Length: 278
Ligand code: KIV
Image 1: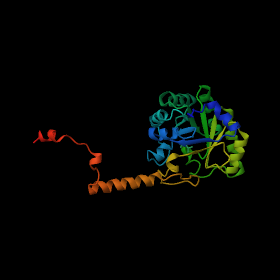
Image 2: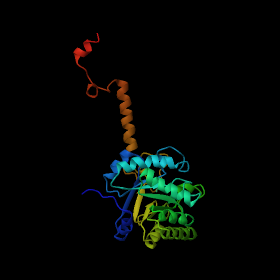
Image 3: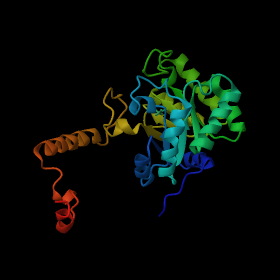
Image 4: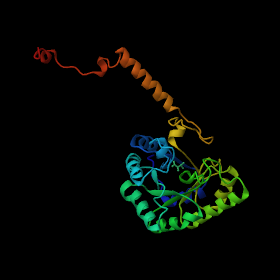
């Protein structure tokens, strides 16, 4: 049966029906093509791009142009998968007008189906403004990498009752503002369960335990393609980095030894043509 792209209103229905949502990140065409063949319903072109593809220390330097450049090939490669484009730092924080304009660019120029932005109650009016402009918005609370330094680094959020109550209030404000789903990053599993029970929109967890409505992982983390640090919540499903390193080493050794290319991987011309050169 051909895979069909999940429509935004279906997300709530899937939650109601107890169907788990699966999302992974992608930043290029070949990865998108592979994901499109899998049962994964959503691709996030995350601003994790900055760290796992562009080699930055964090996500802050990522620009709108970077995001559009990487959303386009993903959309081309995955026509049967819902594509969510991350709004980079400062693309939605200055004014609502700018937020709407930039969200629109991710759809018009990138081809994304939905945008994602970070923040709680403070960004709820911005979420409302973007949704009112006809653009689906996925929210993101808990550990929000764009403001990680203000949060004291990459660490679990909402461990005490005061912080947990704030995160619950954030989630409810974002649902009221019209968000179609909400990413919960690095929060205690029990808090994620409580938020999941209180909302009608799906929660998508990353480091938020098993009781969310869906899960998201960064592809480079789960495939062993990013080893600068590996968070506790990452499960490595394959070690493609190791396979690639072995292949590169073998190629280098064969070139050094003159074993590659052999005639099987070379072109030939007729002897008579060659003789004309003598
Ligand atoms: O940018 C990203 O990849 C994300 C995920 C960590 C959810 O926001």
